[in-house]
Image (cartoon, rainbow, N blue to C red; front, top):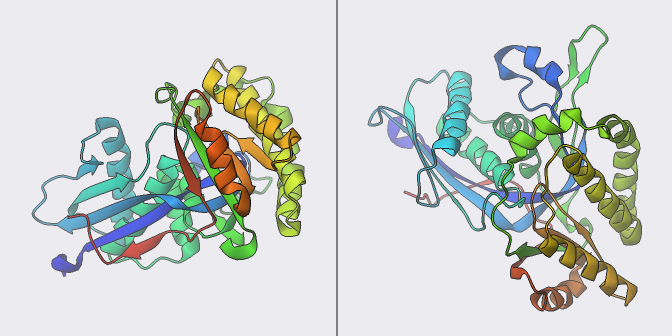
Length: 341
């Protein structure tokens, strides 16, 4: 049996149009970590095809402790989170075996490109499969959420809604928090052209930001507006109404970063602003493109698939842009036959 306790998962990043920021503390009272990383609000995202994490997990009596490497290096802080995740899997599978975990990204981390999301989803699929669990897509999304909140969105393919939890008046959980597709990846030919800026990796992690924004004076108004935003966003996607989706997406990005700025966090830099201002100018000149930003300094520029190369060429000419990556609607988390070790 032990020789079979190895699996490799691959999961993509996702780009959120309606962002998740802030954790629902009511989840902390639930037993067995059931409410870990419950979001304060739902979110809408697109699963991408070209930016992904690949993870191999091997359980064996040969290992006296868990070990984790990312892109060939050991990261103590990341290892703590991974080992905590492995403990969740061991509990579900009634295992005590330790494991070797090796993971790679085909893009940089700590830049707001959702490396924690793809990493969590890849780990959830690989670890649960290696442990002998056969989870449904919804169960995988819940497991990935416990590893990293937005990881829940990197499990399903295509156009995705991450649902916030629902509690009754007595504080009992009525509806769990997970992500699911509401439209397939081929619904709409949209491209995400990512401008990687020359700004160093972000100084404030997303995890830290979740805590600091709790004191923002704009938090309550943002949460109150979320149900309508999510409803509008889904409708614009169903209708393939790009101008309306783009305007909503840009407003949501500024709304999110207002939370950060009012909490003493600065992700947006001069290089970031330069890209955003140029996207607005290109749009006035007739190129239909819109931007959004996650918890980082790099800019996602959404456009029609046929305009992706034009957007790329324009971004290449901007000072402060050191690299460009293009993502398109893609499949969700899946298993690979070839392992990393």
